[in-house]
Image 1 (cartoon, rainbow, N blue to C red):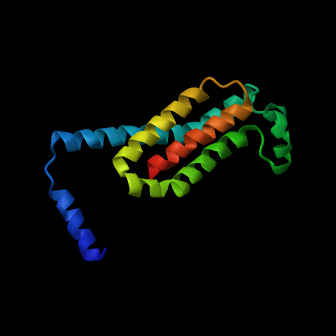
Image 2: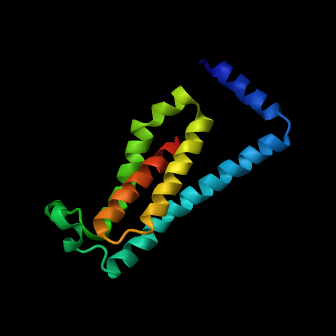
Amino acid sequence: MTEKETHQIAARLDRLPCTKPILWMVILISLGFGFEIYDLFLTAYLAPGLAKSGYFTPDSLGPLAVLSVLGIQGAGSFVFALFAGLFVGALGLGAVTDRYGRRSVFTISLVWYSFCTGVLAFQSSGLWIDVWRFLAGIGFGVELV
C-alpha cells in the first residue's frame, strides 16, 4: 500500500459521520483498552502484596523450585508471567487477526482474557497464579494487536 493510498483511507475514515454504531464501537474499544491498561499497571501493586501474603516464596513453586536458580521466583515470576503471555499473544497470535478479522478476534481474546483472569482470582498457589497470569497475558497480547 502506498503512502497516497494510506492518506486516502485515513481521509475517508475522517469524513465518516459520528453515528451511533461508530460511537458504540469507540466506547467499547475504549472500555476494553481501559481495563487492559488498568491490569497492566495493577501488576506493580499486586506483586508486592502477593509476596507479602506468602504466595510468592521460593518454596511456593513446588516442583519448579529449580527455577529459583535462574532468578524466576517470588513476585518477579508474577510480572514475568504477564509479559511472557503478552509476548506470545502479540507476536505468536497477531497474524490470527488478519485471517479471521480484528473484530471477532478482539471479542474472542477479550473473553479469553476475562475467563483466565476470573480463574486466576481463585488460585491458591504461586505456580497456578503464574500459569493463569501467563494465559491471561496471551489474551491481553492478542487484544493489543
